[in-house]
Image (cartoon, rainbow, N blue to C red; front, top):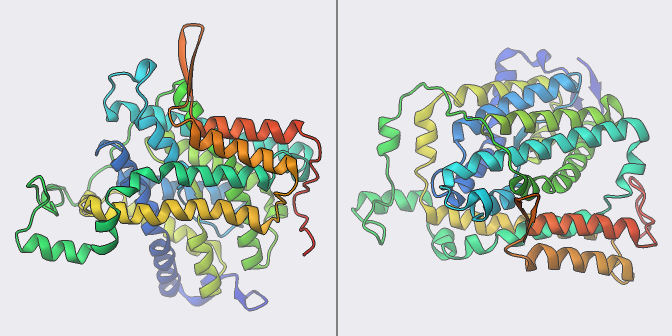
Length: 415
């Protein structure tokens, strides 16, 4: 058995049964957050959004692909990314250009096309890091830029959670079951819980894959979010390295982990799934179990793929009342913004410095003020720069041109 510190690095020594149980533990750790993304996106697209089955398949397959590309060394699970919720919400409400008159279901493939381009940006960053080094790249993506962008992502979603918040906080799924059994209904007369879909769904079935589509407006709504999600990836890789006591940023290298995450995201979106990202939930399981073998993560990925072929389970999850979804949303969107604030605070971004204050102010105003985006026509094509796209573009440009950028990635400021 191989030990570093007090961790187990080869789970095979524990025996097959215990390895399988550890894999289940990792699957349950990622499950709630992974399926929450399609549930929320469905609320934006009025029931015509992402499939839970496709999402689980993409999470499992994407994780296995990530492990292959990182030389089977990194114990990371790739689940659904919350960072792109703002982009999905924006695309769902687009009504200019080709989107005018479209149904929500017709808009969804274009949102996924935007995610494909966002994933491609991972590949671009991976190549640049491989060629010129991580420190020179990160100089243009400091916390003063990425932190406020994450804050905007959370706050821009907040209005969609306000209406059902009171019921969402009070009512649990168990309470909904009791009320439904007692014959109570929603205000419009519909059942609080509808199990018809679960009852009629087959036990085994192929996920509802579809092919993504591309449009410049949808791409501009989605692609800039990659800036925030790539920073999340780098942070997660640092956390996994610290937990396992192995520097994965050096070996197999940050460029390979970004490549794996980017390709997993691209392939997921091509077949109708959400963006993927490394999951902190599974890093917590690593810390608690002290079993650091990537094999147990790959078992969790296989379990996720198996679950993706069980439609009855997906329909049962889809029966969650909108009130409960609203309550979850209320907490989640606040937490997304809080992550951005934490990024600014932990990196000791000095807002008494005028350049930093200007960058943060412009990002927040662009991200929250241009609720309808900025629409213009180029060569007869209507293009809309969404609020998040404007925020990202302005933040990066200002950070590049304003004097005084002294940020060096990997160096902590003195207390």
